[in-house]
Length: 101
Image (cartoon, rainbow, N blue to C red):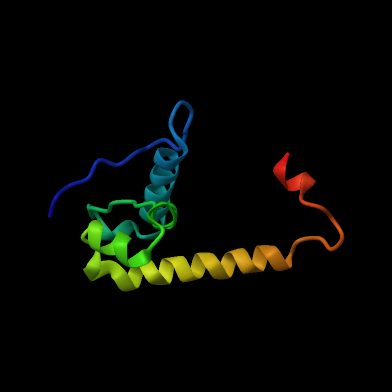
């Protein structure tokens, strides 16, 4: 099994948002599952990539992710359901101005 380099700090100053999120997710994974040991993971930005491709099938085939297609689809579905929950929690009668500022 290939060993991974573990990050010991959660500081994200001076890094891009994606890199920071990947590091935080890895720290969370290590904290939740300490008995797994050295396990190679690779973070992906699936939702943003699918939007930029504009077509789920094109994204999956061009990235050679056909074996992970179901996992990516479930990830996107969970994101959609979460966004619907946020939309339902939007205060009635308030405009979008406070969200965009």
